[in-house]
Length: 233
Image (cartoon, rainbow, N blue to C red; front, side, top):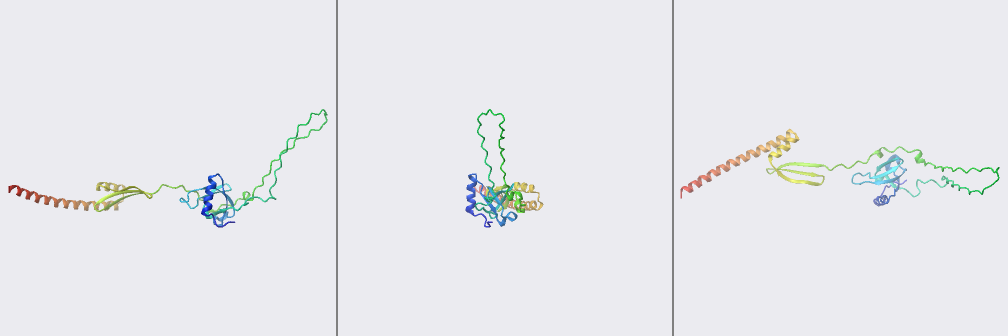
């Protein structure tokens, strides 16, 4: 029984063999649990990035995924019956040659030999298949869509929105109006977040009003000065 599992080179050799239509034979290692020592055939290699159990092995009537540590290359001649147990198939009898026509009426008729079907001896592993280990019942999970993140941020008096899916940036941060930011937060329906946004908008509103008052006062002073200069002409 092999116990080292598949190496990287052996996995690559399996990929090349599968591409040509061959199905390499493997033996389960001790890491595979209750099926250790059994033989199987590799029928597919899935994406290792999706799961470490990317070696799909057929044994018996099952096709289940395993990791490279669970299987090893089957030794030559593994699973074959010894020569003493192999029963030679009976040769198909040759049809008898057409006899010459005879005129003797009492010649006994020789029946044609019956062709016996060859007996196929079932291998021990097919007669009593061991119950697969619990870990072998895992199914290959399909890869789901990448996560999506939409970020609403406030910094330096500006509201920005950005979107990212997985490692790909769908939308770089761009500036939105405070009213749009408040509508976005209202969709979340989280009171604490909405109150925080309203407090920020109230502080910005108060600061803007103070600046407007200051600018109005400065403008009034400038207009008064301009009026004095016009009268001095």
